[in-house]
Image 1 (cartoon, rainbow, N blue to C red):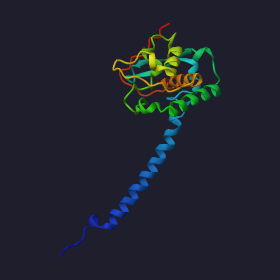
Image 2: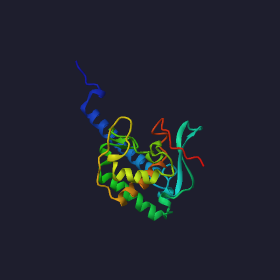
Image 3: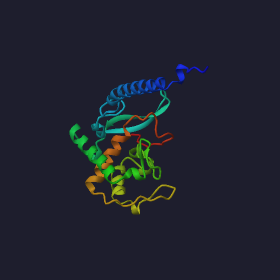
Image 4: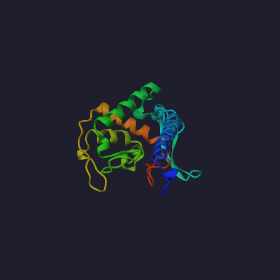
Length: 197
C-alpha cells in the first residue's frame, strides 16, 4: 500500500513556492529601501556633486586594505567653482552625454558595460593624462577628437563621436565626480596620476 508523503505532495510545493516568493519579495523591498540612501549622491560613499570643486585622489586605506578616494583641497574643475545645483546640472549633462553617445558599448563604469575599452570609473585619476596641470584640457580634447591622440598599449582606437565642447566639459565633470565614489578599491591595481603638492 503506497502512501503519499507530505513532502511529495503537489499542494506542499505550491504553498512553499508562494511563501518563498513572498518572503523574497519582502527581503528585496527592504534591501532596496535600505540601499537607496547609501548609493545616493551626498551619502558617505557617494559624495555630493559639488565634490568636483575639490581635489580627488586615490590612496591606499590601511584599515580597509583597499584603494579609496580622498577628497582634498579646493581645486575647481576648469578653474570655476560651482554651486551644488550648477555642479549637479553639469554632472547630469555629462552622464546623459555618456549615455547618448553609448560609451558603455565599449567602456565600463563601475564594472558594468562592455570590456573592449578601459573602465572609466577612475578615468579622472588615470596616469594617461600625464599631470594634473594639463589633465582637464587633454581630456576635453581627447573626448572631442580621439582620432589623432595616443591610445592604450593594446592599440584600440576610440571613434570620433561628434561630441561638442559643452558635452566634452560635462563628460569630464561626470568622470571627476565618478572618481570620488568609494568603490571598495575597484578597479583593483589602479595606479593614480601623481598629484603631490
